[in-house]
Length: 311
Image (cartoon, rainbow, N blue to C red; front, side):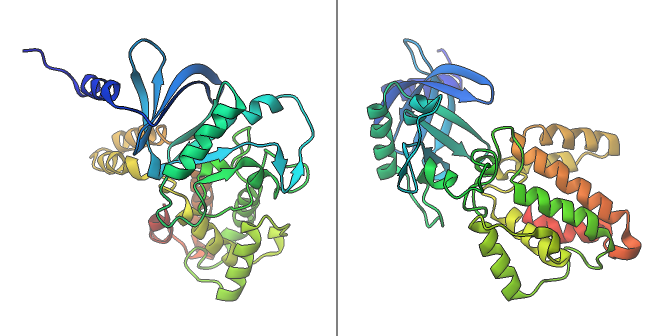
């Protein structure tokens, strides 16, 4: 009797399943653009290669999926026509905890059918922000000249990939926060350990979450450290990615230091680009603070205890 591997079994089950919607799209991930088929099922979205038989490449659980929809209107005003705007009207951005892509449909009507159907199917599960939003809602609240290159209106609780610029850069406010902490952190006793005032924390967090123009250089380092920890804690699936937990733990079980370091590097390479970039910047900051323990009073162990639970 012939044995089927799990992929074959799933492919056959998928072929027999009746999708809610099915469409051929142009899919863009990073710089790679390819033709793919989207299959919307009751509990997941499947990205498959096109062909006579369905060959699934990626399965995305709907309760872990964010969908951003482009449109002609931003904050109630019609956008000016520009190059690429036709494709914007037929595209959606799919974001999940470990990645993202842009799906371009054959027509605006087909795109709107998918958006409407997704809006009715994707469960909210108490999330603070709707999982389905107009792309204009994010761009409209960016600072002048930063549309598409900085962070969205909501800074906290959003997928990191959705906050980064088209060039992969971190949100401007996070970059500024890291820069201030790199400068002030080593000389601030108890940085990342001591708490800041509740009122000033809430006010600054709300201002950043609404895209307000804040002079972070004038803010106390202790306050910025608390804000940064809260930002890290709010990232869906966390900075180190929940699905990679077992991989991180397995790497830490290696006995030799060199082997452990190599395994940790290998796991880090599995992170989405935005997560890896922020992790590198964060570790560089913590190392800098740890090297100045005489003034910061924060050893590597202290920093790990204070930051680890947020990652």
